[in-house]
Length: 355
Image (tube, helix red, strand yellow):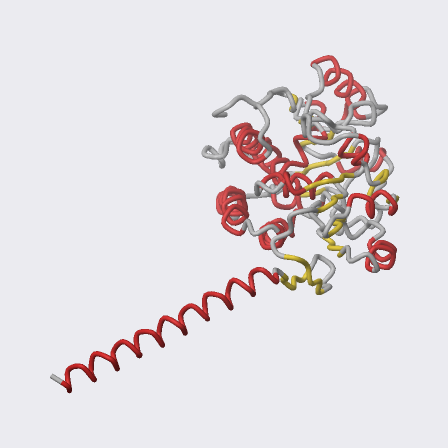
């Protein structure tokens, strides 16, 4: 009996010890979480330690805002640049004039940023990140560079945004959705002759060359960029005649804003006329055969220009890509990832759902 009593006491003590250790471990994990910091590597390779997850940020550049929105973290954004603010249809009822932190990523209002008391500023590498780091660091505001406009960095940027906001699962789902579409294009176009394409961004003669923001969008679509060998993205339009592209893709133009609201049919018709009536362009195969695709500024840029990639690929290789439906991809981007109603009319000719 006495032996049993001793065993009982020993068991009770051991159980108590295990409970104590277990509780201590749980508290340590909670304390660590409460401390809430994480060190990340941003798009410039800088290591930045920030609160985790981020719950209060200011953002410059629409591509960054769209990625944050896509992972479901837009409610953490307390300030944006004027470019984002000026497209209220893309972020309906979300931002006010009092939340504008400057004209763009290169022209920031530091007093306003400090007033908004964010944990971090997220901007692009072509912005004033060095100046911002110096001026905001003393107030405990971290500066994180995310180059969301680079198509080739989409997967990496999704992971970074997901980590920053504690939205890893959402970011992976977003990334996987677009990477699967891209992998399909690569498989289906790997062993076929590439079609000659002239890409023009807004201004006459503004094209894309290696290293340019739009280069990978065209490359991933499987196109043969007629200015692959060029160094300057601004080309003489007579050079386009000489290189005679079989296809032309034009992204909007200065009189049509980068808006969620699509260009009107009249806008599309006017832009098309500016291309087809250029001197000597009636000799270009793309013009003669009516192989011209117009993309709005908004639609081409979705998901770091991967939505634009889908449209260009389908335009060039419809027979090789029967299971690629760019308008459906755009619809998913709008409804699921940007929380906006689907709206058609961002392309000319207009793509249909299921096409």
